[in-house]
Image (cartoon, rainbow, N blue to C red; front, side):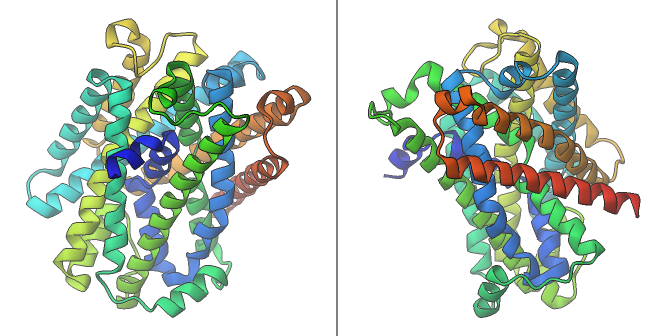
Length: 417
């Protein structure tokens, strides 16, 4: 039954799960530790906006059978496209470094040993899997890894949580709008709505469209609008799981760390370590295992989305379905992003600095990409080709405006110290 359910789900569930990478876990942990349950409402606010922009990117990929880079290149000058792709690759590489470092630290906390070595092994393993395993098999493994997210649900139920207070904070925002709160809210927005997710899901839907795996699995129907309904259901499922897991992380860290005066968390692994003396070994192991599981899912998505962007921007052959010798540029980008990220773990770069600059670059890249995406589907030609419902386009524009405001707040806060 589980295998059948995972098979029927598509790129949306993988994209949603990849959003809860170790860097995202660190952001949610800091939100819970610093503000208690006060920012739980942010995951409710971002859910429809996040789902809308992901559905739009997925529909662009499915209908055009091409990824976002190729579609954006048809709308913007080449030098702008190259700049956006350069920023995307840079942000993804830094994010990979932060994720691998967190995975290495998490394994060190559980079994001991050198965290850096573990990070390098994780990086090499993710790279080997992307190169060796064909796409349709690889996608199945990624879907299976999404089950690791539920360790955070189990974590929340392994500690005492005042659920009445949690429900109130979730639906009634009550955090003071000070400098630190604004920065954390912007960080949550940037974590949930990220450019690499747009590129990944659009490219995966393009792969699905070209290879027709949905038809082989008995999912694709011939009724008008059936494909949009499947993409929407798949994406809503993935984004709901993603935000629900983020919500549970905030709840867990608020009920444990914040309640015991621990208000500063730098990494996901540090959050797991801080949980052990407060919530016990079971909670600690579940939290640490979740970091490793989500990292194994997120690192290939980060490297893959960078490779899809580079391949389409420069007209290279690129697909996870192709063997490495038929897509050298594509797999070269996958390898370069993954190993460069692994190499960064050997440096003394502050992990918080890496997360900050990733958020800044992602925000800068996300805004023009989202605006171009909305222009594509909102034009007269786009309304006819994509036939998206009006409510979806409205939510898409709201999502683009939210990210524009978030980036402006982030830049403003940075300039004022």
